[in-house]
Image (cartoon, rainbow over all chains, first blue to last red):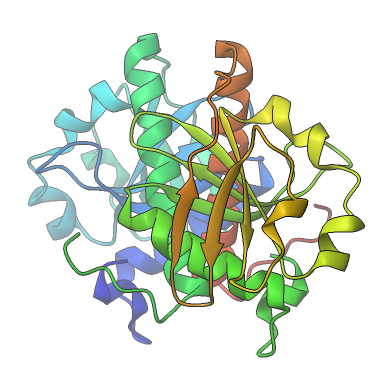
Length: 153
Length: 153
């Protein structure tokens, strides 16, 4: 788990991610934060639905946070649906069309606009579910076994 | 996460599971403890390998623990390879052939006998990887967000 996820003083985007993950769980989607779909890419939230749906949610805490993100189009090939998650004060007109919109705070969230679906090819989906499974399991193992050595990984 | 996994005084089988999971990680297998492959079944350790291999490991801390287990054959259809994990003092002659053998303590483990491979059918493998992913992600979410409400689940 990245060290900054363990801080007692999380960044604003991480608080949004927490609310997003809580809401997604109420929809029966499980989540992993800070997932690396491929070297050089890192998504804020990857969610896995009850039918194997793969969603990606990028959490933006401010206009500056959004404007400095040049990578988001690179995430589209790794999900069936792509969402932004922002707080109530965010100027949503900035956000591009053809993406989903979630309004969140640290405690909950709501999907305001469903993202269009662009289904993953089976091989990519299988790879993403495996990546998700491995990331989640490693995080859970680190949580239950703090003495775990990750040397060499 | 089952409450007993959170106890500061884990059961002997759970200590073996910890050592097993540490060793499996050194082989690049990620793990989930206490996974439910299907209603009414619960395996001590499910491991997912780098090529999607699905292994199940049942941890037996004593002869009595082993003799009281009438369910293990029911786990075979859910994995490519099935192992027992026991401590050094365990009377291994009790264990059935055609299964793998791991000797473990709370800190590490070693595979003494590789289990024979009986490959899962693709649909079953896909279902098991999804189950693994969901269980691991939910445990990791509970660990990173202790305020998470699981009411209704």
